[in-house]
Image (tube, rainbow, N blue to C red):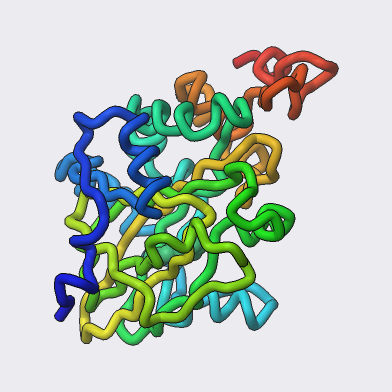
Length: 289
Ligand SMILES: O=C(O)CCC(=O)C(=O)O
Ligand SMILES: [Fe+2]
């Protein structure tokens, strides 16, 4: 269905053997970069297995009161949050992955210092779901949209495919180059998008300035399952309030760097003596981590 011009073929593709620096620079230049085989087939199988039951218990559609957000979330789409609590493989392997942390450092260290997780959620687009409205992820931090392409980095999405992503089953669509447009009130139109087709286990990294949206699922019976784990600058408030959600006994089993990106340790944005603290000391001391 997808022609060459209108397909993933125009996006750069790397593997885990590329450096974080190359990966980030390709993503910045093209708008998105595909990382083949980010997860092993075995990790994909384990994560799917760990998330099957909580996903089955969830209804499709959004619980949000705002119509705009209901439309954004999708009516035949399930969004399962709090993956850290639900999936041991996710919290111990994906969130503690060296390449993931190197990408985080490359994106944020020199420009803003620390980064943390926005959310970690599974997005399963079901048959019949229409295309998600086009948007930039930085739009939830409005001043960054108002600064257009000149804004510092706010948020960068890493999406991981838990099933194959095809144009027909709702692969994420992007407008390459939209990260460099002059006016960020402009989110383009569907004809300008290309689908990001992935194999299960692949990932795509795209910045918060790039226009994108989940694709329409026009299949009769395929469920497109992906994980979204955006990384954001620590000066910005994440979507999920992990310290109020993830049990402390689970957190104690995690590595210090994972504890930090989910807010159980203090954050040190560039030039700051520390944020998210207790009595001017690191939260880890208070929590005895
Ligand atoms: O599900 C997708 O492919 C994209 C979702 C997305 O862009 C979002 O929720 O911000
Ligand atoms: Fe998005």
